[in-house]
Amino acid sequence: MTSLFDTITRKKQQDLVLDMHKRLIQKEAELGGRLFPIDNEDILRREFFCLDENTWVWHEEVRDENGDKHIYNTRYEVGPGRVLKSTNGQGQQSLGLQEAEHLLKAVRLYRERVLKQLYPNHDW
Image (cartoon, rainbow, N blue to C red; front, top):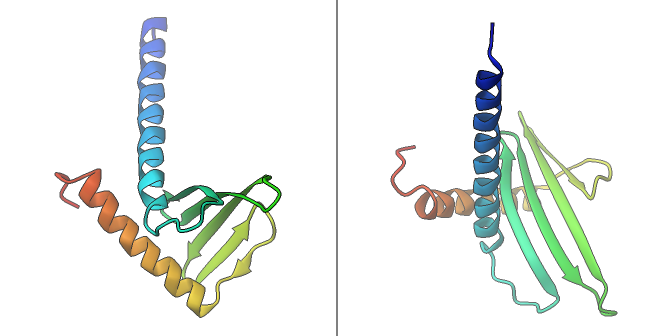
C-alpha cells in the first residue's frame, strides 16, 4: 500500500520535472526566436521551438500600422513524406517546396544553436 507521503513525494517530483521541461522549452524558444534577425520594429517577439518529436512551433507577436498587437502561432506537423502547417488553429495545409526548405534551414540552425548554447556538454 502506498503511503500518503510517497504519493505526495512522487507528485512533487513529477511537478519538478514538468517545470524543468517547460523552462527548457522556453529557453529553446527564445534561442530559436533569434535565429533570424528582427529588422522590423513592429515585430515585438519571436519564438521557434520543437514541441515534440513531430511538432515545431513559430510564434510571432507584431504590431500593425494602428498600433494593435497581433499574435501568430504556426504549428508544423512533420510526418513521413509531408509537413502540414496550421496558423492560429486554422485548417492544415501542406508546405510548398520553398517553405519546406526554409523550415529545414531553421530546424538545422535551431538544433546547432540549442545544442551549443543550452546543452554544450551533452553527447547527442
